[in-house]
Image 1 (cartoon, helix red, strand yellow):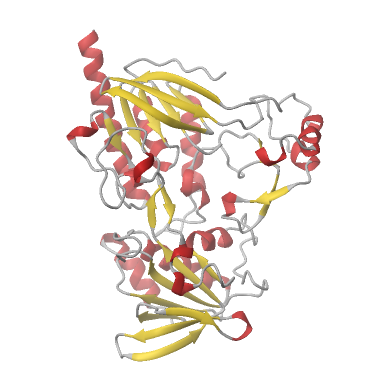
Image 2: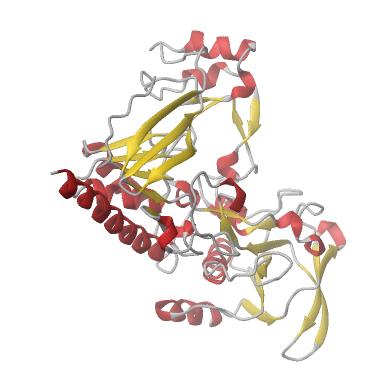
Length: 426
């Protein structure tokens, strides 16, 4: 049974992505006791699935490694992975949180040797690669997973594969009798940092994401570009594995649309400009077309936008693509009108990348605590929230830099609450 030592001066952080890790570490490093609860079996969130950041095109791995090192060194931080906060009761300075912990069937004896994965035959869609590849029923979520432990897929429990995995383990790390657990503990303040999820591209029916293999999303493309990703970093077509040299990006795929997401997700334009670099760096004869309503690259990002605009093999087409149909050789064919010249087009490409927006990971009707939520599902700063503070993309659609700033602010507010509790009791 997982044990948590907590008081009404403890800060609970819900979500272990870049925002949750930042808030937890900032608070713990001031001396506050912090409990971090993460739904996945590892920390890092969506950032761990990125290949590069914009605008510097640097890799997130170094920042992740630093945060992981900080987490390991801090005795004030307790981390619970594979867990969800199912209920919160009480008020600021006096909350009780109920947490459900999902079994991973692997205990802390695991050395990440990988022998269990070698013994298992069953395969499942790899959620880390957004289903673009398969993983074993015993698997390490990714190469920088924290904690660095293997996980058994519940789909193999009760099968021969589960016993094979147990027999292969030399460290008695596999517990096939592991079950779901529920724990409760007090907290004085809560930081809600549950992050975002990509908008479901299948809902944008005219774009045929669920009908055409060579129409993918920006998050899938990000994994494809990663050398550790499903294609080994090769930009190829899912339908036949051929090189995708003629790539189209469709901006605002579902964003700023009353039928889908009302809001601008802020990251999509910059993500496509970044991913344009992936294509032109991969192929000397690459051709990239960016279909856009307008490009939102503000502040320091304007130079990055200008750099991509200056590329001879990149074309910007001001248009809201009306539909995608099947062209020759499974080429997606984009249909619409160029609003700068009012010319109709039917352009074929090797691969189409939908710049889908972000929406909150937790739906409006699934919050276990009463907070003020706006039309888009983000948490608003409001008096009724009491000692619950939103961080990162739980508060709005934000890029990584702004999400980290938001998390630091949330940590400060939570620290102020528990400090008031300490003074009142001291």
